[in-house]
Length: 407
Ligand code: PMP
Ligand code: GLN
Image (cartoon, rainbow, N blue to C red; front, side, top):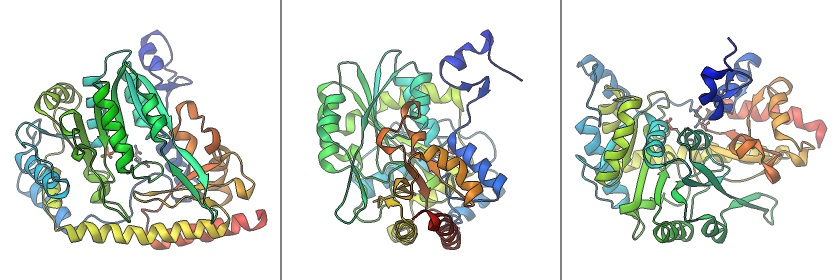
């Protein structure tokens, strides 16, 4: 059914429709392409791995034990307590599980509820650019104004792509209208981890402008060199920071959709006000399972990250040998690779062709820019390495055959 018309003006105005259809996310679009071409899917960021046995068994046990009806809207006590204990153990942050923790339906709902609760029409929300695509949609739904700070990029002495944040540009992007600054570290799509100097600038400017800091830390445990730095743990940050994370990436359960927020009680109360009308409550049997996961020994988290690091190396080394200019991510699921050296200046067009030409799916970086305008990054693709070694190896072989005639 063609759905453009006066009834659906609101959805169209918020950019949710394209040509009268629901605008598909780039991830859904590219996963459909992978299926249609029987291509290897290095596009959408979901892992091939099974969740840790402790976590999977706890969910099965919870279902068998009867945790199948609405849980409390704020989340079951066991998970709220585990979130607070996890924040204390890993980042030295104290939160009261009764009033300062809210369980959500993934980080996606946490971000949407936070933005809907705290942004008034005309308020500015600041993010880096490229940014995770949901941010623009959620800001638009709230009637906010999206301001962005572009990442910097240059080529290293050995030819790699190096991405970074210009602290002064970040400072300059704050204004009297800035309500929220949304800090995604480790960052999707680049795998960049924001350094202490950048985070200090965020806290400093947020304080000067009386803005709130919202974090998106869903890749907090998938770090390859330095440990994750929680923005709320910086001096002066905790009272004005809404920290968001989720279970999907850490425990390889992206389909479970369990996330959480930690913040001061008045902020949690406001966000609960929005959350309860979005989903009311979140997956009952998964909550105790994630509580068990968060309490696992730190060595388990380190082993998961080390295993992923090896696959990062496999993919980045392989793409470099094939002829891409690659960036080596410090964290997360993704490598950004520049196809310009292979004679491909337009990554969006290339991403459309690659599934058919090479049998491999990647995401054009333009999907993470406002209006799809990636500027200098127009030739960049995002490849996921949260896949099995054989999948990555086979994808590299296919890309090598595709690229050989182009070098
Ligand atoms: N933020 C970022 C940066 C992400 O990459 C993702 C999803 N992959 C999300 C939020 C959404 O997380 P969830 O699946 O827990 O809703
Ligand atoms: N966060 C995942 C990615 O960046 C996708 C999540 C989704 O499909 N909405 O690939």
